[in-house]
Image 1: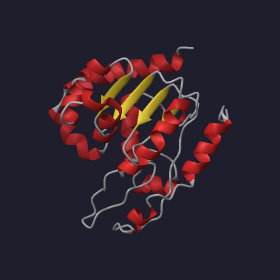
Image 2: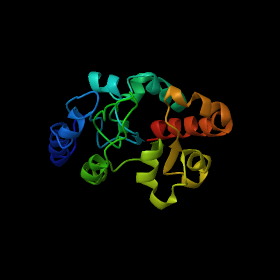
Image 3: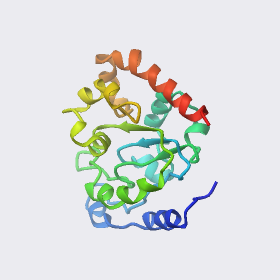
Image 4: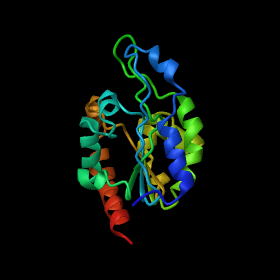
Length: 205
């Protein structure tokens, strides 16, 4: 299915051509050029609100095409085929481009300019959303606003209070494996509910 609205088609074209952060990225340790990764259609029922593409995604142009994506798909209980079906699942990160690494090789945060420029223009086109997965602190702060708790752990622990519209998740990075071990309630209580909701949203007409 193609974009239903000519306005959305134009918006996505403009987004792919965005170079607002070119100077910022050129000054990072990776000294890379912008490459916005756009993955959405107006028919999507689930929105994955993530952080920003990593280097592997920057190179491939496909969101969550990495170990974090493998873990996220496992959390959701979906296959790669379902996850990458843009008619069903949209991906709207807090930055569409890879932010780069700092001098120590650590991931830089998503530039706030990206969400401030694009999110308010894109979200009205996603009118059939039934579940928003808030992956990581940046997405949680932006989408939940004052309702977000201090820190990811407290926000995710309060997941029931944000239902049925939104469900906060920690970032699926393998660096968070220790977090998962410290918080066994996530796998015991939240994940079964997440998988059930994802299945219901995708299967219900």
